[in-house]
Length: 177
Image (cartoon, rainbow, N blue to C red; front, side, top):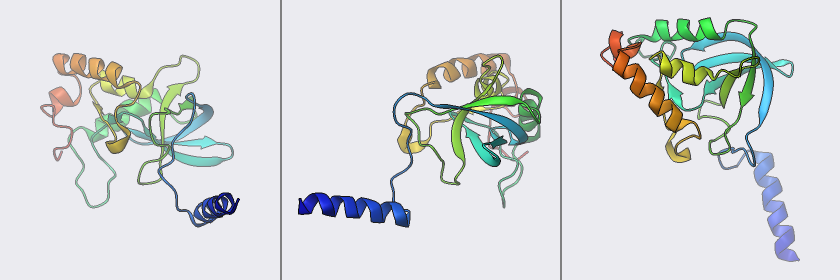
């Protein structure tokens, strides 16, 4: 009994002080409706959900950086952002879909989610990869996301066509632009 009380006490103290392991979704993928407030860059959007704004990093993709402090804008970054803006314009209704195999947040506190257009179910990350404005990205200890294989196939096709960064930047997603 004393061990049980001790374990509960440790859990309560850890939760109250913010000590925890990386947040993970449990069970099946969870969805939440939201509206796009604005596109931050080619793989990040700010959405309005539940009366507040949240920054969401698209799971499984990485686009050239345009807003990282202290670093130059990377080749193709403005066009990657424009591509995502065309798809997810201000006010667009979207679904935020968690992937149970991935952390809930990244190291910057952004939500990690697939972002899908509410009406069509179109996956914004897949579109960015197909257009060549995002590459497939596996987040460290989380390992491959559930959609990684589909994204890899889309990447191969984009590279074969010379789409996006593959044509404009010789396929280098992180060169100075």
